[in-house]
Length: 173
Image (cartoon, rainbow, N blue to C red; front, top):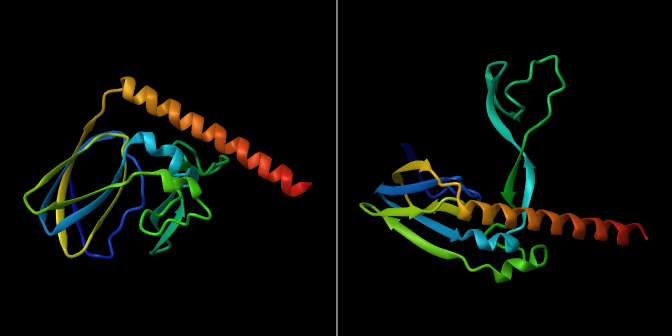
């Protein structure tokens, strides 16, 4: 069980979780922008370098996240995570033209209400005032839905790689 507290400045990026999610609001309201997994071709997922807050020499800093099993003397590679490039609140349709085909669902969950958020649905979460919420993640079933989403993710990655290499070739001509 997780406890979430925030105000209007608290806005998540658009992402997906590999857990089934029950999300309840205790005070205030949470605003969800939701996309089913089939929307992935329109959301421009990219690999981003993972970062973490870490206390370094007495002060908190944002530092690269490296594989936990690496020893300091080993060559530590930075971890990456797939993340969504488009900001649902301000989509740049010149940079991300396929986003115009996405069909976001907007849901507001108020105090005393509960939202079931299926695993692997992309979502962005924000609130308009001081809000307290709790959620419970539980394991998803790795069934046909997972296989279908994995296939779509691979197809989008392959297509993106091909398009980027064609763009690079045209730029070098």
